[in-house]
Amino acid sequence: MERVYSLLLSFPLVVFTLLVPLVVLYWLLVILRLVPLELFERDSLRHEHTASTLVSLGFVGVPATFSLSVLIVFAGIITLATELLVLRWLPLGLFRIPLGVAVLWAAFALASPLASSVCYAVHRWFHSQRRTLLGETVEVTGEPDADGWAEAELLSDRNCRVRLHGKPQSGSMPHMGERRVLVKLITRENAYRSVAESVYRDARVHAKRLTLRHKTPSHHV
Picture 1 (cartoon, one colour):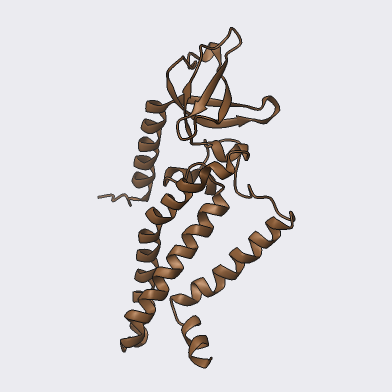
Picture 2 (picture 1 turned 180 degrees about the vertical axis):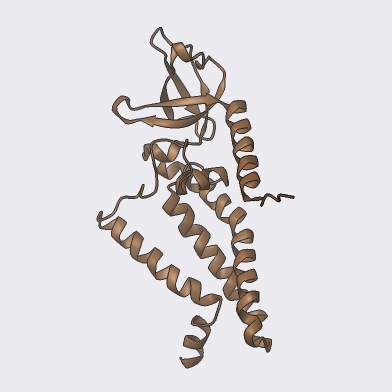
């Protein structure tokens, strides 16, 4: 038992020793309906927040809490395997800290595509959660009426239909057969704002470039 405690409290595995119980506690509270499932979701992807960031990483169609839970579990398994197979056999001393940080980064990097695949496989379970549909791509199934209302269906689940509400005055109206991305939930109307798929992709690329530019230190001569 002492060896188990020593293993669980070793760095970097101790990070998941703390995180996993929190994840379990959160889902217990969700089951008891004491906390919401859509804890980090917002009505729009416009501003950078947890759900928006996860959508940009490919975690679309599921609550951010579910994405984070799966990501933490996979990263924890990878870290545990690394600890058992490699780290525990090396005389690291103080080098355990920088190496542990590198292991954490690698664990989350490796876990991300695995977690994304799992989330995609089960995303239909969460279609009743309207905010989790933000970031989903839909196909418009009919021309909008004079007020900008149109019907669409998810590309990933043709049985899931949503209502789109375009703004005739904005010039960004949905058209039949067009693929669009849901970017905002209008709760009072039970409908979504959307943008053309190409516009959404270009906006994401532009946002990433701006982020990288801000992170690059400027040098003055």
